Length: 454
Picture: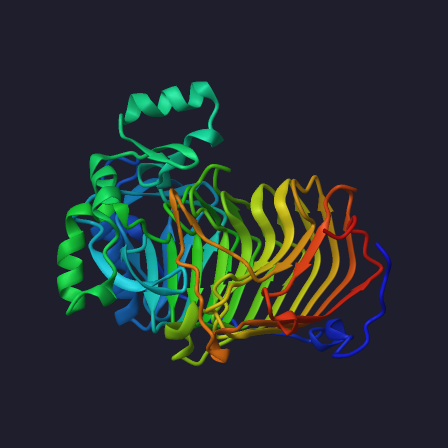
């Protein structure tokens, strides 16, 4: 492709982020070993209460490190509190249970709107100075929750699934295997949305029979400050792996995130309406988007102020995924001031993707991509479009026909420098909202090799 020099905006975003820092958590130097509270390794005896007691004592003491020693530890959901570091030794593995008793349904925010979900395996809300560290593994046992589309399976894999569960839903994409009858039945009952009922309690009561249809995000961090995720391997989530929501001073470094390629909604890191975010030296293989920035969906989301902003991502590798780096499609509160630098995307469906749709509203601006390498990209190297439709098994998101100017999204001041794709057929696509050419503008390329335009 031909190169175009930057014409406007802050071209030297790298120097702007040169001294970028996030405030790290301050954790008290005290250790609380879960074995001192009755935890038994081996992966067969639940340690839920032991971990809860350790966290409570640490919290009452002003905080400290919850030590998960080497071994296999079975547990239910873990709720972190201010001043807590959940630390896994090198050969420690946390595996999560699955039961209606352990995973009550709650009303939360998922995919940009108010939704019912099972409580997350690891959560924190309104907490400050929290971390998850070490070199161990956190395994969400997501295969006990997730549907699997037949077209993503070999014949042998599909037959193996059918031995575990006979329940298959027909869809426009073919068969969709589900692990339990409750998920199968819920698919025909339909999802329960909180806003459709007189109260949240009524909605939760309606949904509770089908608890595992409402798959949890594995790590949910809501309205937290000074957060660190360092060194852990997160894998096998039921839905998204890591979802920080309205957090400030968030650092994610040296982690790996692993989901099989067929993991439905198996996103890696979804940063949602957060401010001051530093993600670096991470390695991801996911069943959906790799690293994604979001900020809510449509008019309801815009009632809350809170763009996703001041984000620095560098030295990350994303393998199999729907997109290496993605913004949207939930971006209604806006996304701005982002630098993604020195990253490699290999085997992803799309390298770089910005997606939105009529109804979202919001502005994505001042996004800088520099020195991005893309290898074996299966479709487009770069997509910047406004016609996203969320495919939900056999139906799609409602398509908005709004004429309200507030519902019209906008992408502007997006700079791509030295973004290289090794695949000559990995084209790039830039497409504004139909009938609104002004919705995508000031997109600049410099020293890029991306194939031809579609």
